[in-house]
Image (cartoon, rainbow, N blue to C red; front, side, top):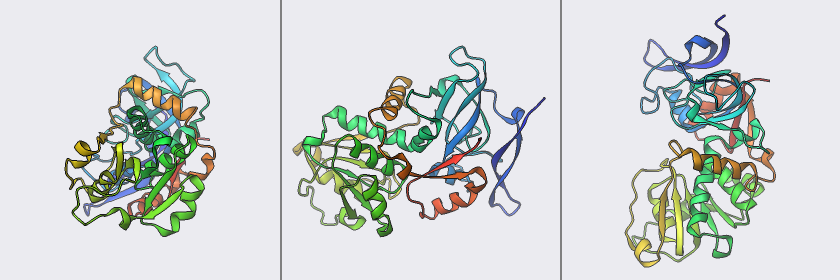
Length: 332
């Protein structure tokens, strides 16, 4: 019997626009993967919002089910690495982009995309992190491996009310860093303080227009989600031997800076790509997220919604009106 299940489906309308609706799909509609997973939780990301509007840079063909994050239980597996009943995480690669994604009760994916759910982590906790938390973890891992430590100074987090910024702030605070967050949302200050920010600065303070190649040293490390002149300003503000991890470009893909931060202060800039992260490092990061990097108060970081609430939530995301993570409960 070809089982039916609920899914968010984005379809093109006759007017050339795109609509999001909760509808039914069949297991046979899914791509032929090694492992069939019953999804218990997903999470919303900006790529999902873009996919829901017909953005061909994210999703080429419609109708389509977005959802670049999923945590669930294996139903069937053709790969000996997984068996029915295993709890797993699926993020990154092509999930939710051109492969039917996690905003549905089932996904079918290659075994190579799957991470076993680490001990000490629930499926809900995995999606409190999702791609955003995993990306934040990769940024923190890069900075720490470079030698950035709490003793060396503060960490600056830009785009701090988004998924990556929220999780980065909470994790950094957990492991002993003093965190300065950047936001353009005055209403978010209480939220940022609650999740671990020691200092909150307005976005304009990190948008230096002086043209100077270097500014006063202020931060041992930077986690940047926005790019553009804010990243350039942050680079000019690093202490000697500091480093920045860049993982986004919501402000701009341009980087108007000079080589001076790198050759006069010995700074480093790490580019973070979570989509194709090697599995060995992927498992290492997830293990840390489940253990020593687990935030002390995860309930402060997210809002949980149902699948039926996703279309409206995606609209709020596109309008820049969300703070923190949104976790989607798919199956009871």
